[in-house]
Length: 582
Ligand code: FES
Image 1 (cartoon, protein in one colour):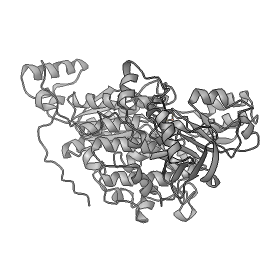
Image 2 (cartoon, rainbow, N blue to C red; image 1 turned 90 degrees about the vertical axis):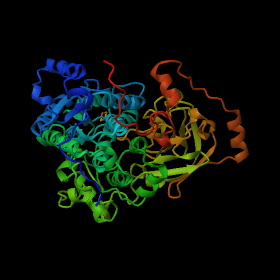
Image 3 (spheres, rainbow, N blue to C red; image 1 turned 120 degrees about the vertical axis):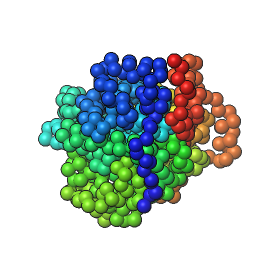
Image 4 (cartoon, rainbow, N blue to C red; image 1 turned 120 degrees about the horizontal axis):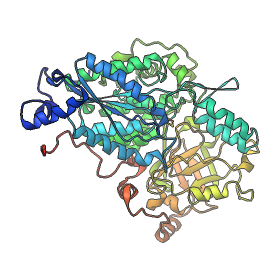
């Protein structure tokens, strides 16, 4: 059993010291202005003050329903004797924000961190949904380390089109390739557009949003069962309500992110990611969150821990179903229980509920064993994330075997190189492009510094002339990311990235490349001397931003193999603030 000793209660809280407690001029100043919102005096009597950190935004459509959900959180907080104070933070909407939402994850995390440290909060409910919002808020909260709990907005209902279920993202990529291959018309595609997103919520596939919701639950940072409840199911509101109740007790007990997010918790999350066939983006986000708590987590941990985990959740993009079916089958607790029974879980990891992970899941039942398969009927026996290394990726690159074509996991092919995403777009439709299905597509300058922001373009579409042959997958290698809803034999996050002078930068058309996932190898078949000569002569062609946030980002972002956080944000800075200035 994880050792956690609740703090004594009652005691004087942070919100009282120097803020709402006492009769000094400063105390009166802090309380008086708050009272312009109609808050009665007895709400400042020393009860826990709880922030509701909300990523609601109409520009983040996946989180556009979070204002309503926040009201449910408030009910729970009041009911448990706390004072809720809702506040907005920067919201990074995946489908709307350019050049890529990932560029703003660290900005949002800074916003959260400073908002938590600089205001009279004793604890916080993190309201998240769309991909980057979940890691951003966890990173910010981890750096301050006041009691914190996650509640997600939940996934959209299944898309429905022409009698079929269609999934967010995954179906978009498929239909796009079908249009390129002439299988459907633009009118068909437009008809599918609205059918894909027909309710509030985040992507309904096991994309990055669903993965990160699952990671929050697997880390122990959300209440059990949170991840899969559809956004519009009344049980999502219940989850928000009880989360509000729970944070008040967490403050009384002083149960902090650092008590929950231990190395064991991250190891649990990595294994859960393998079992759900989770997004490759989870690799970067968990590395970054771990860095904020001061946990030494590496790419090698991902490979080591995920290698023997079968993918048992039959959801798109690796499988067939969507998040609605996952919820009806029992959701993430069923998966966690299966891992626990197989000896693949730290059962005694502490969670925000105050119970261990095992206590939370031991009595759950699987209601559909085609959606959540038994291990012997897994989608793939080697789930998880494969980390390949070699002279082309000295610091590693990642691939999701469950989303790949098994026959391509061992492949040697001729490189067809795209210097950047514009070069790719300019050439890919060219019928004279010297490419066939045995080639390896190489995309450079799409890493953290290269894009900048590390766009989700690693699953670049195949050339039409290959698609017309009925081929749907080729080996692709880049320093980019891939949408969690995407699929294919796609090597991502190649580190060091091309824009930082990694070997990827000097791959040339016609070079032979060998991918050997079983042996975790990625090799550029040129001599060491030739590689050194090319690297010595290499000069970056990526423009360096001269001002603004893009400048800060370019100068400060660390490699994808370390989580792509800013170098000056890694670590835990605590909740202490400078003295009041009034
Ligand atoms: Fe927001 Fe997928 S685009 S969750």
